[in-house]
Length: 175
Image 1 (cartoon, rainbow, N blue to C red):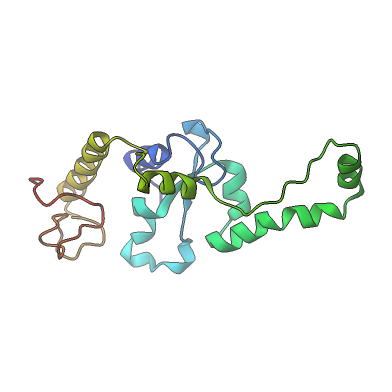
Image 2 (image 1 turned 60 degrees about the horizontal axis):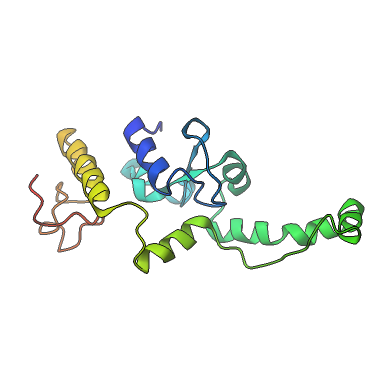
């Protein structure tokens, strides 16, 4: 399913124009939209796979290397790269001459470090910008007759959703 421009823009802004995995800056035109939880784990009929919460901005390199793997399989593949390279004589020469510096470390993806910062008080997006984004997102879904994706009450209000809208929309917002 094609991702519409509004969702694509929101995905791009999630991490300030950076790949969610390696953290490198990516141009909007070069961004690929990755399904965080792969498409094969979703029921295609419910459309939740294309929900903004499951979409990540990715550079071509990370998106192709991750493929349809889970995050933990992707992490393990990256962690195995040094071991795979050590058998190559070019790598060994690079290490011997100091052109290659071995620096194995646990793999932490950019979005994980950003979310850790955000939970400690540093915001990725200002609260006002996030409020405008959420209102636009919900208004568009309501206007299209879709309601809030995943909300069986067909409204993004926290009151109707048992007190916790999954997009974090405050209950006093008027729709």
